[in-house]
Length: 319
Length: 297
Image (cartoon, rainbow over all chains, first blue to last red; front, side, top):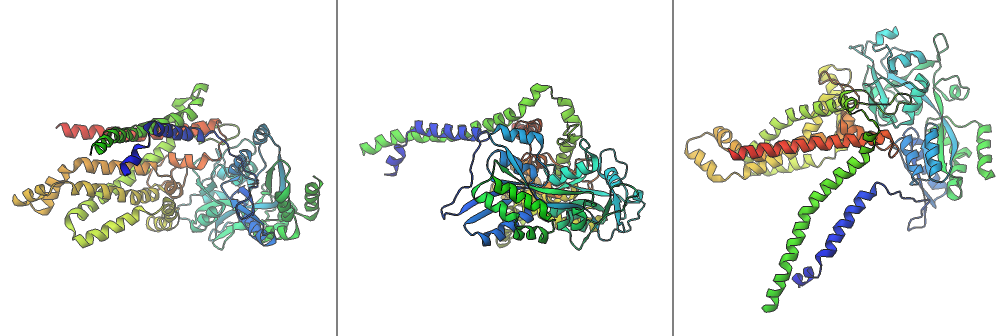
């Protein structure tokens, strides 16, 4: 019997099968799949939410809380970087892209080419803290000094050049810790320090997550790093930052972010492809509600001031 | 009986064809992959891309707004340094373990060893990377008084640990394949155990051992996640084992997700893929030539 069964498979069709498989593999890179707000078998609506690593804690906290508010909706959150989120939004695989920087003009152009206009929502603020090891005696730093440390052609490589002896660090070398280049934090920090066209010095340790940076600084007495202020631990210290020499150095906090005295703070964005409606719109409205904004504060970010929040809700409702 | 005979006449060529297709498919896949990778990356070559700069510059600044630079020399140096260090550790340890497991230990111990080594091979590379990022990092800081432990040394040790299981299992198999008559003959000549290993078994299993080492190298060159986490991912030409580096594979993994499809950055990353492909091809080719050279003697 077994022999007969094998025999009934003509070799020609097998060959065609191989060929089809090969073609599938070759064309897989070019095809774009699109799924929007798909429901799974249990009738739950799924919202895909992907992007910034800085915002992943916040987005996760929102998603968990929203699951108790509206159990019929499940929000799937993942990180990967702001650039990754935008790329996924343009290719239509996610409903919401988290982004810790503004969309670039060429990203907006590419989005428009594929059909719809991306719509921007500011959902909170983040103060980018400059971290050093807790045993580092340094207390404050200026933007100019940071540019000399991180920027291409910058001259500061040793802690002693900052007029600060770092006894915990025997080699005196400043170990620069940075982020991988698809991170919104990386781009924002570069822009804040070096302007639109500056580049970072090569040779920094480029880590893959906001939390990793703080972890590594906590283990490394010679290190300096940057990450959202929500990630602070007991092993690290946040430096006060001054805009320029002679200015007052300001500690990163909710107040100093909102009154704009802290120089490296930025808005956090969520982008949708076209005007959101249905469950995505409801979700965004909930994010702007008191409960949603409370989570912003409890995860270490800065909630929107009331007038701005009211304006955002109005814009969402108006559509 | 006649019916059965006729069936065999029909099935024989069918089975033969299936096997032939399986063989050919491997070739088709290899060329298909090479073609695909090259097609994605080749566009930039026709737009005046400077290949000399690509290979000799160590400036890798693909996301600059004003001045994008694509030089992979530092990345090649990174891959080479980590792989060399890993092999310097893994080859003696791996071959030593293989000789011990196959020749010197009791059958019971041998079983235990094999299970443990297989377990070592089953640890996912992200977990290795995590070990590098946390445990190894602190160990290196403490032992070498280094400012930070994410270095060539860290990546090299992690990669060595990852490729040792491959080297051990293949080398052990090839030692096992040496006929027992060789061992008996050596013992009959009065050779000590070590003399038997050194003079008889190692030369007899030469091809298999070489294959083991080369597969270990291929594993080390191709590994991505662990080196991404353990080496510090810094674009820099290393001057000592305590410098950080960035490898070719880690660069592709970290940046391909963000690079817009068909942009310069995207195509350059695929060119790096072509470079990696060529490196492994060269490694395999040399291996083949060496093995052939040995056979002809």
